[in-house]
Length: 180
Image (cartoon, rainbow, N blue to C red; front, side, top):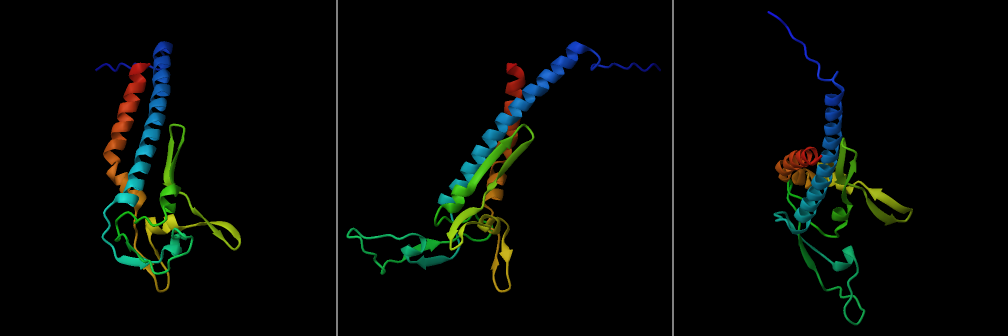
């Protein structure tokens, strides 16, 4: 039996073609990352603002989440607003919109897509601090006498978009290599 070894890499022209396609593939990956980040962010924000919630109903005064005034400029303390919270496993229910505003993504080359919710800035007595509220909602937390079960907006949007993410990668890499 005879063994034949063929080295494609030694051929300079073939090596250049491989490197050129690798560069084009990286361009396609980067484009796909932007599409994936945009789409996952949109899905998470849509789930928070319009998704079906099945949690408890709470009644709160409008001044708790921003002062609402009547036409003559006076506050009406008799108004109570109903709010349906999310159940564990659902995306969080929207009250102020701060969580939705904190959802973002960042693309770094063809290797990294960061997608998540930044801490929410809170004005307090000691300046502006960043809360861990998005992390608590996503992963849940437990203190001595309170437990918050996870309400994963980000994980839910990744799960809903997983097939599209694969399609984006395949389509953009293919387009980048074919166009070149």
